[in-house]
Length: 228
Image 1: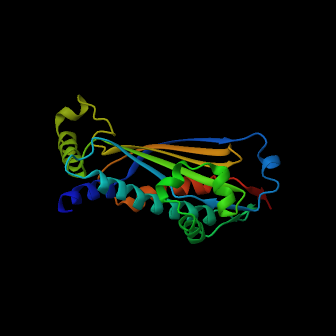
Image 2 (image 1 turned 45 degrees about the vertical axis):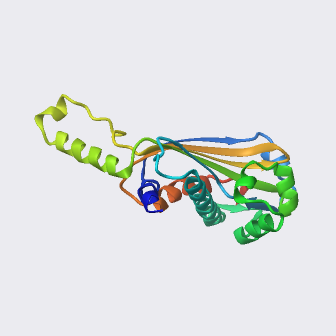
Image 3 (image 1 turned 180 degrees about the horizontal axis):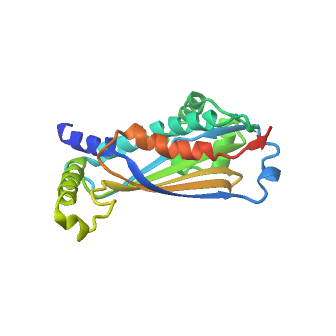
């Protein structure tokens, strides 16, 4: 377990320093959701790829994916509720309590990892909801936070020299990983809404920053809202 600590730090100390977002809402969203009253936020699917440390067992990485899955699920749930009602809009569906969602999955012997790929029709029936909210986050790792820190120091040194004007330094130099996130509302095998987020991270901030940045964006633009 001691050997796995550096990788925990790698995945923990991240900052989204650049991002790109795209949105989609089905043309018939209002018609397809007219009878929706309750939705559930599922555990987020986590995928770690790229140059993963060779000394970290696959079981440890799998456990980390599942731990982050619940962290992203809770953050998304919280941000959806935070932006549910404003002075201009209100959300016309309720969100199932996250503990209820997890307990119902457990009662039906559905693991966190199983829920990532399970048919949405079965899930909505088991959870007693009208639609499910899925999120997938892929982290493609390039280097450790230690290496990223070293590159940052070198970049800062270069910027203090006369070479800085002749040697352009990309802002993404020293990034630890690229991050791709997708959030969807799914009902009856139809994607009603989707939001994507693309950015890169470096060593400089804790994981709660990256989780908050991503889920804040999704929560802010979440559908099921009407003008007051």
